[in-house]
Length: 307
View 1: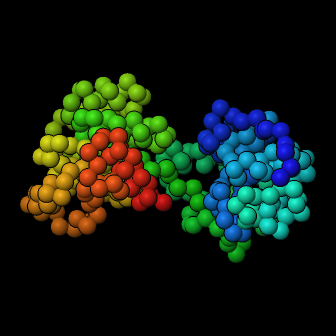
View 2: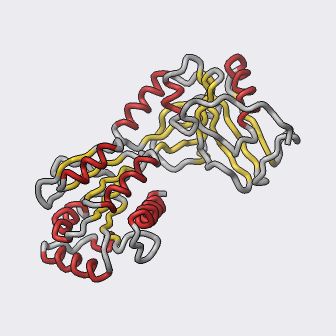
View 3: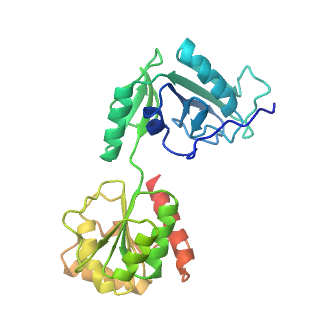
């Protein structure tokens, strides 16, 4: 493949391209609108170009510099489509995965549209953007990412949000991992030590005064409710209300025996619907006893459910 100079990156090169474009004077959005064969990034992936900076990525580094060159031209010439890999006119720009990409460049996206998207995302609402046949970007009805009869839709779903209940090293280490991965989260614990450890590492926290799910806690369909209690008496009241929510993942640590006891307690509370949604023992690695292994195991399981 032809060697090119490295493209300058923003401090957060894998950050939010749409948010970056909103704060940019002359942004260009690059969007993957078709894939042939394997691909490093998914359909609908967005990259933003703001002057000499780029936010996001479309490949493993093979095409970004060339896309940047075309993005500069698009500011002058208008929207365009590029083809890389299979079927591309540029034989010296190959994709290591062997597939092909269609990239649509949208220069000067509407600031009002980007602000509207930012507000919707801050409120954790499902929204979608559509590329029209004449290559303009606009809001459209939510739905799956992909081609439409009248254009191409990009689904913008809220990121998974983790509501982490519990105390001790398991809760603390899991919260650290979630924070390091950049996911929104909240740590809820009945003891000050767990909360202090989480706060020291930059996690938002909330004190639990008794075994209950706070009535004002918003749980949407992109929320994961994960419990790390050794005192399992804390679990049933929290889980009973969580199972009435649209949370996409609900789970609690503990052995198979603890799970059986938990199920019995929930039935005693009158919970009969949705018990099959309750994960436990949690995690992809069975009988993980090290809190670090458990944290990685549980995060992988939750993210597998989120996709």
